[in-house]
Image 1 (cartoon, rainbow, N blue to C red):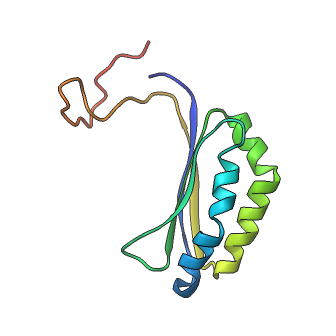
Image 2 (image 1 turned 135 degrees about the vertical axis):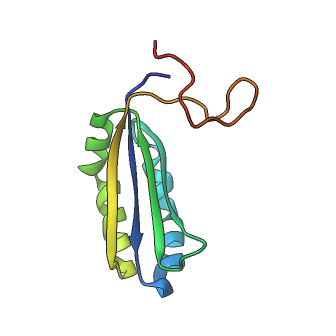
Length: 119
C-alpha cells in the first residue's frame, strides 16, 4: 500500500528500579496521545530481556501530525515524565515510509520481499 507514514522507533535506557513504575505511571499519557490527530500507534514498552530498556514505537499519518505532537502538551508531559526514570541513554529515530504491505502473502506465507507492485 502506498501511503506516507512517519514511524518513530527507538530505545531508551533507564534506572531498572524505576522502569516498570514509570511505564505504568505514563500509561494514561500514552492513551491520551493516541487521541491526537494522525496518531496511529503510540506505545512505550518494557523489554522483557533487559530490565533497563524501554522501547518507543509511534506511527503518524503525516509529518504535520508528528510536528503538532512534538509541539504539544502530551509530548512535553511524556518527555518530562520519562526524565524521572533515571535516563542514561537514548536512541530514537524517525522514518518516512512510502511503501508497506502485509508480511503474509495470499497463501499465508511470510515474505521478507515486497511482492506487490506500487500503484
